[in-house]
Image (cartoon, rainbow, N blue to C red; front, side, top):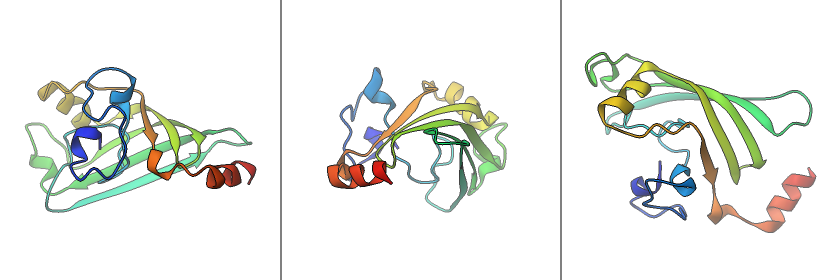
Length: 145
């Protein structure tokens, strides 16, 4: 999700309706948990997704991530669409579960094609910033652990 999709105002988006600039790249991990904002996969029927993260060896703040999913009538969503969609790449956890940066390196053809069909601006770098969960005591405890 991005700011304009948060119609219940459940999240804090400094650039809620921005289309350009750094705050336009903020997302919330919702509805399938994909790290690439896309109109593909939005449905009011059913959606199945698997989200994976694998920490890098050592004490590095980087992880690999992959998301794969399908939804009602995925193969018939538009001409050339496939049954499954995916994204995968590298993630940096700056403040765990509060501020994370995602760099998708691979996306399925459905995600790439949907960006072309809808003139959606495909953004490579996205970030999660959960300002409402920003509790200094919890953050300090997580950093120490």
